[in-house]
Length: 256
Image 1 (cartoon, rainbow, N blue to C red):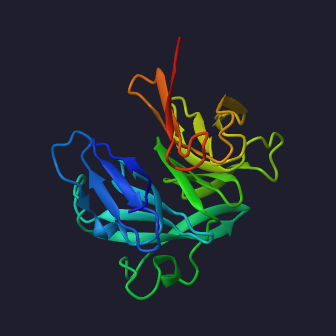
Image 2: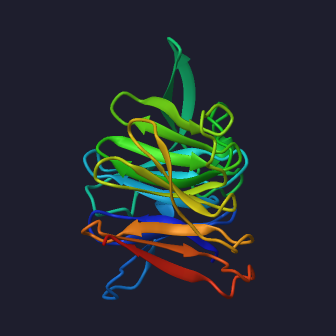
């Protein structure tokens, strides 16, 4: 119900997330050989996206709430077994002017009495967790209510803000939402509203408009993804030009 971004796994499945208060995560086979399986150990909350750290065998998850948590899941067994494990929520602290995250186990991932994020009193609230992507030890994620894109270093535990509409010298990105990333580390950010653009954040701090969908003012851009060769980019206008959820459009951008 109400599936949202989710994310792919290194073993060629897709984790589809439910975006409501007691939503769950389903592991799906894009090739249609196996039925989807619910993964209760990943917790019940308003799921948005998933990214997999294949080296440390950890899943990271965002929560689309005004005060949502940032989570990670450590399975009991080696990948690809996600049937059991420990769900943890991030806590934030500052050291020598830098932000760092630590992790606290969620006592009741099924949220049978208390929502997952509220089970740890000093959890770090993020203002509407959205897209999430992993590359080479870095986790990038966006928060829509403050128009920020964050970067978490899984080795150092340091958390940095790589884009903030309030402080950026080029604040053209608003309505931050789904993310994808290129092999060279360019983060593509899809706008939910805003100017209906896909914006590129480069490793050297440039902010580059890549593509815009005109006349789709009541829609949002979703699902940016590359083909394996990185020569084709796909994304969708969720509600289309009509803005009524029944006229969604998917686009392909190809290298000449």
